[in-house]
Length: 49
Image (tube, rainbow, N blue to C red; front, side):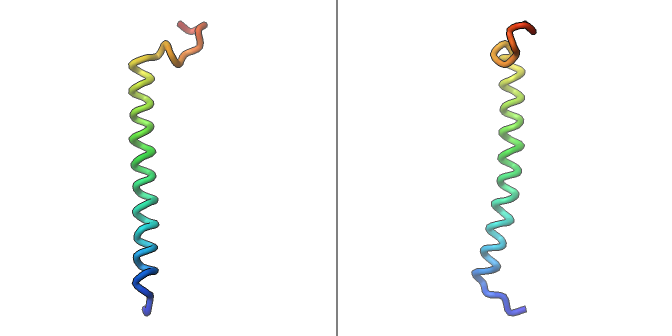
């Protein structure tokens, strides 16, 4: 197991970036859902109001 330190760091950074992207997507989804619930008239077509 003679892996360079830079390769280990790079793999760690990729993993962290992947997880933070998933977390960010979840937060964005929750924010969008909350704003949809607080102002549905902006998002629904005018027929449904």
